[in-house]
Image: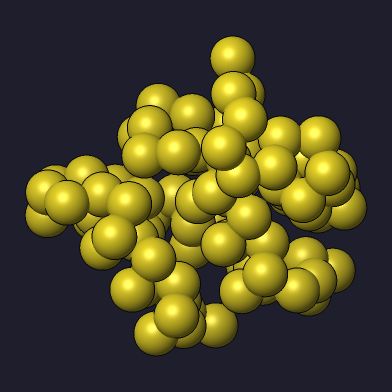
Length: 87
């Protein structure tokens, strides 16, 4: 399954330059390749929230989600809620 329109819109908001957008879309597409990778759209949006516009951090969050997507959701919603620092 590809990226939903909602995820694509969020990519454009978070990453204003087309090369960055392409890099992030590629990284986000890694999540959801396997049948056991659940809640694709929700996890991809959580990854975008955690990355906070950083093309360097997003792939790391994708890899973490591939290990256990629940960690990524936890970090996005409870550990690093919007407005707090991930560093």
